Length: 215
Image (tube, rainbow, N blue to C red; front, side):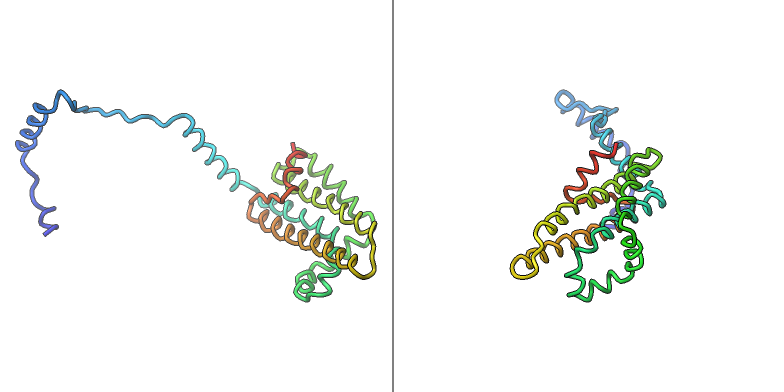
């Protein structure tokens, strides 16, 4: 029934002309017909917002593979430098041993020389962060890894100031070290994986400090 209705011949032109005359004669004074309707143009603010979204999406997709790799590798630096904070949690829980075991050769090489951490810090800061030849994406992620490593000074000072051997003090130190290690591990996984996908990882507190340092 619906198909036959759709396939039925269109009404004659005389019908539409008659209806048009009737409508025109009755409502022409109140509802004038506009043969050339004017649609308002989008506001400049909306156009700018649309162009901004396009530019952002292009910028996210345009991160080079080399920039992603360099940025991802930088997050190993604070993790290697603070691996000692995981001495309690790694020895107690075997899954962490399995997770960290592939990194043992690199950690051993990093810890083989006492000044390796300082030399890598100088290299990353002056060769990468202050080098305009690198993209801002690389310099931001590198600076974020450096700031994360600098923050390790505070738990190190607390551990050197209070070095209990047993009791409640030892429990506090174990909890502090395990918390620092877990934060470094999560930062490594988050930063490394985000950089591989060309995303911008922003760590709490660390990201704002890195933004102020990267021009």
